[in-house]
Image 1 (cartoon, rainbow, N blue to C red):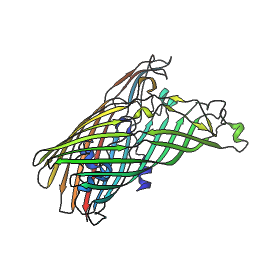
Image 2: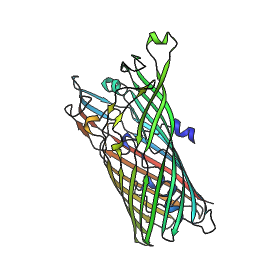
Image 3: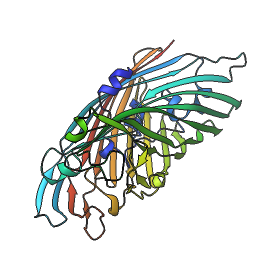
Image 4: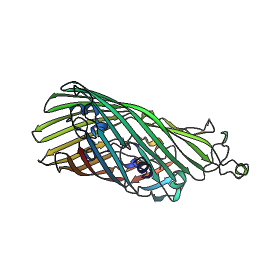
Length: 411
C-alpha cells in the first residue's frame, strides 16, 4: 500500500482544499464534504475523531477505500512582467489513492480503551505546465505525502472520551524549474537548472475529545499538530566544468509546513433517522512564511510566502433509509495564498464544495459504499502591482472531481 500511495502521486490538492491540504480521506468524509467529526462512526473514526472509537461497538472495525481524483487543467490569461498577453493551461491530472483504517476491539477489561490505525494522504501538490512562460516558472512542483497515524482512545465516562496519536509523515518531493541558475554564493555556485528531488520522515501528534450531552446530540474537538515536511536529497549538477570534475550532484533540502488544524464540530439527530453535522475548521497556514532551499549546507535566498490562516465551514446530512445511509454535504473553503506570493505552482483560490454518497449494509458485518464530490474554485485575478513574480492576469477553470468507493467490515 505504501508503494501504491507513492506511485500514485496523490498530490494535486491544488484544487482540492486550501493550500495543499487534502481533508477528504475516506468514503464518509467525501460524501459529507468533510462534515464528519462529531458523528464519525465507522473505522475511519481512527483518523477523523479517534475519541469516538470509545463509543463504537466492541467489534474490530476495518475500512478499505479507493479514491479517484480528476483535476481539470487550469487556464491562465494575462502577462508576466513585460511579456505580451498570452493564454496557457496546466496539464489535467488523474490519480487513484488508496486509504486504510482499523479500530481494535477494547483492549482492557472495562472496555474503555481502544486502539486505531489510519494510513492515508493528508496533503500534496502536483502542478505541471508543459509550455510557455508558466513552464519556465513551474515546470513541475510535486509534493507527495503519506501519513501513518496510530491512535489510542479512553472513555472517561459513558458520554465523554479523549484520544491522542502520533503522526508519522513521509514526504517525497520534486522541484524542476528550467533555465534558472542556482544563486551564486552558495556551494552550488552557478549549477544551472533547479532540479531537486528527495524525501524524509517527520513526526507530529493529534488529539481529540468527544462529548455526548444527550443521545441525540454530540460535540467534538480535534487538533492535528504542525509537521515540518522536509525534502532532503540532491540537486543535479548541470555545470560542465563541475561535471568534468566528477561532481554530479550536491546535497539539497527544503521544508514546507503541513499546518496545524483545529476542528470544532457538533451533530444532532433532528429525527430518529436524520443527522445533521456542522464543522468549523481552522488551518494555521501562517506557519508558511517562506520557501528556502539549502545547497551543500548553505541557505539560498528565501522566497517569501506569507500565507494566512484559513477557515473552512462544512455542513453534512445523513439520512438512514434502513439498509442504506444516504449522505450529502456542502462546504466553503478559504484559500490561504495571498496575491503577493500566488504562483503557477499553486494558483489557489476560494472554493465551494458539494458532495453526495451512500453506504449499503450488505450484512451485519459488511457494508459497501460510494461517494462523489465536486470542488469548484473561484476564478482569481492577480495584478502585477500586488504580485512579487510580476503575474498580471486571471486563473480560471479550476475544479476537481472525486469519486470514492469503499467497504467496511466488522470481525
